[in-house]
Image (cartoon, rainbow over the protein chains, first blue to last red):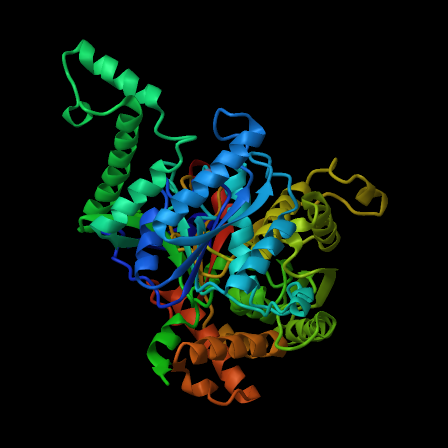
Length: 308
Length: 292
Ligand SMILES: [Zn+2]
């Protein structure tokens, strides 16, 4: 058979795969969520997770936040002061979401690419064994076009830490500290949707008004980097030139107007993701579930697992 | 994802000559058996000479065994599995399992390249480093190094010291990238049909029974899987009746279900009963259509 004939003998299958509305996901049953991120503000950003964290806390979860870097580059105060201010604002912002504690690993901000990845992974494994999360949240380790080295490294370390922590032969020395093997069973990955095709979420999480409100407030807690009064001032000037004004800003200072603008941004993005899922507010994620690493067994388990 | 096309190729269409040499690169465990065992069994049955390069020592995947004991058992099981599958050799490099991220890419690449230049395969099977959502990153690091070893093996100037040891540059014609089927977009063709690996499904009808038997040889990792699964179900108020008593027979049954489930997933949409799926970079995709 010639090569051309061989090629003709291939059965080409057309599988229809039109874009569909994301299914609405439930928060899995559990007690603890560990959020693993490099920066002070990654708990809540325009693509970030503040709404889900607030919802999980509403549903009974304890939440803990890991800031892997020292955030020294973020802000205009100089390295040491940025670290201090950003950590303080991180504690304030995460408290609004109901997070109990911020654990800072203090790797050097924007210089995380050359760090020993297995050392970072071990730090995350220690924390997973201590806090025993059911759910781990972080950047989607498989997203494309992620430019920030800190995001890449923490996500890659997390991609292994969340399940490896359950294997006793991974850092067996932890046993002497009373840290027992523990696996998280769900990984929620988040990424910007405008950064290419690497991240296509598989679930939308519905949020209520109060959760969106907490997300808005948690976001603007980071005054060192967001809600710059000069931005609101510039907008006012530009609008005034065309005889326009924002009525809601009339009695506000520039600083207050800047905060309000950021809150609107959080509300807008939550509303937009909600509209895509057919609910008022949402955030979307790529979720790896408890048996997704066993693709050959998933159907068998769904048919044969029974309640005790 | 519209216009998704998938080349489903029966085994006859692979055009394998009986005397082919095949090199399989694996990070460890039963990875290559679960992904490609049926295809390899078929190749071995037709007289292909298959050599497996196992990069890590599998020391961590066990149930209540030390890393040393785990590694020793895993090596014996890897060699027994290879023998049952019909491969000619299993070579273990002994890197510590789940720590490949800390190994130099170039070092790994050059050791795989030496193996390729030595065995001069017509066909390579390597882990697919481009897959998404595979949480075992050893497979990513192994695949990335193996992919470059495939390329570099044919480039005379890469590691010239290997020529001093009698090794010549070698070009491998066919490459099968394999991965656990966890990427929902694994069947979306890559943008270009030329020079880029494309999704390909291979029927494994006759190889399925052999594949099940070979996968069952990995007793240490299989027990780890069964115990962890049972523990997760028990601690969340559920049970899987077959694991009510974790006996060797129950574990073998679980492994059989896993292999059958994988074969069914790969066969979905093809009309085959059992299959394996790859990204395939072969002659079909390396010669532009206008020249064929
Ligand atoms: Zn960040």
